[in-house]
Image 1 (tube, rainbow, N blue to C red):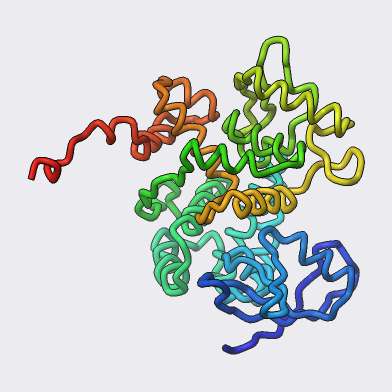
Image 2: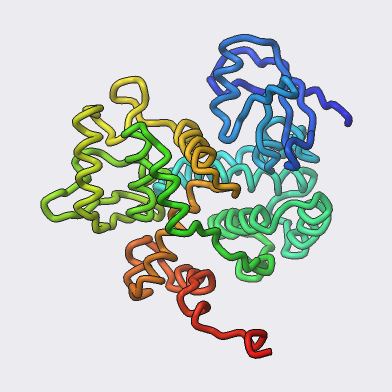
Length: 364
């Protein structure tokens, strides 16, 4: 497989650029990006900051997931080595400043900024005010589809373009006519209650068990768990307060006596200072990568042979609530969904009604 050599700017804000050697590979049936570099502590620390990074003992190389973001990061995207025009670069900076002033999250600002960059690189020779709706279609066909990029990535581009062109004056484009890709109808992945129990019981470390238990017991997103503070646990009212989650919304989630007792045991043992779950350094938030490693360890110990992610626990929480007879409107509130349509997807994976259906095969 062809190896590509590029310069990758340090994620640790180092002054000097460093040489990395990258290539695409298949590892355990999955597409990965192998990253080769000189064995130095600071470079190893840097690669570890990338979500999903792993060291392969068999291949003797660090690898990361083959995603659009990581391809862009290492200049593997088809035109990522190019830059937009000077006008385009100025517009991207202006757009990011506008997003910041509107208090969009850092992740959203980066995602939308990168999406706009990809589009403006494609049209680096064209004046931005002259871009039309037909240009968006050409970009979709000749870049997104041609390079087999996902529908979700295309949707991110659409979100960024719609927002950007609404802020731009004197343009040819009609924002409301920028169309989205047809929606993919994928069912959420769910663990059975028995699998969740086996997963949680496999963890002997109180902190590890408490973290995954809170995610499942309260249906939290990963970031919501890591942003919790001890004061967010209201044991008297038996509530967990989730502050400024997705969409900058607060919500409350009920917690049981069983979970409160588990958290008390954890708190007495670890005594966190600022964050409810802290890493090895005092007052430092537990890292996303370490949390994923905890899940990976638990899945292995529980002998669950599925590609479980942390979000599966949130899906499982919602599905098990539905199977227990909880009203869909309450589940929507507990998950923090804006639309009931988002929550309705769990009706398609609930087995409660399906198990009552008798197959005609049984009558043969």
